[in-house]
Length: 301
Image (cartoon, rainbow, N blue to C red; front, side, top):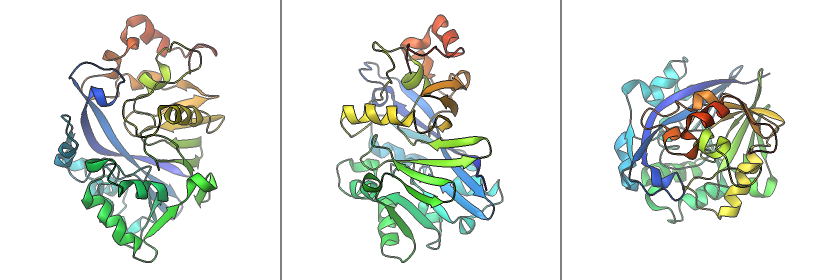
């Protein structure tokens, strides 16, 4: 039985562009959507990422970061739109545990299993990224660690991938954070991939021209080696021959053989504040037109 994907609108986050664009010299901010997903398959209900705990918590990471949220964007309200309560959810999957991805997990009862890559939980409590992992969020996961059946730890670096339910699988991301994971679901429309923050902006990372052939762009927001981050994004683009890519902070696109083939025009309007297209070399009219007509193989990924 195939999975059905329901997008959860969990607010917005405003960040300094220097966190997202390498070598950015300005002091502007950029507003991005924050999204989670409800996956349903028969009686099974799974949530992927839970947004931030409350808007003000984003200020802890500094650098002018703020959260923006309306009442209807609270996680409970978003689930209620689909007739779902936290008690109905079997699993909560976290692509990673950053402040804007794991903030409302304690709304789910201990009978709901939270699924995290073990390396991500280890990194979250290491102190290496400080306020990016708020104690309110991470201490709750430690409580789950000591509650039978409340936490499912994956070992993706060693296993290469683990099945959660039929048609639902987690893979090691290898980028953004040390323990980030990719969630892959099989739907009636085809394979869907939730990539967390490996891709912040489809346009900037996957569509903007690069100096070398068949390359991908990076953000400034990752903790692994640059070589590892580059390889992680490239692997993501070949997770299946054809799939739907769901970034956490941009709109979904269709990828085939490593190329974005549909949906690029929607990503131009992906931010409700300053648009990515104003911040990259691809902001010119001729390059915007090129985005609406995906390149032939050999120009850029």
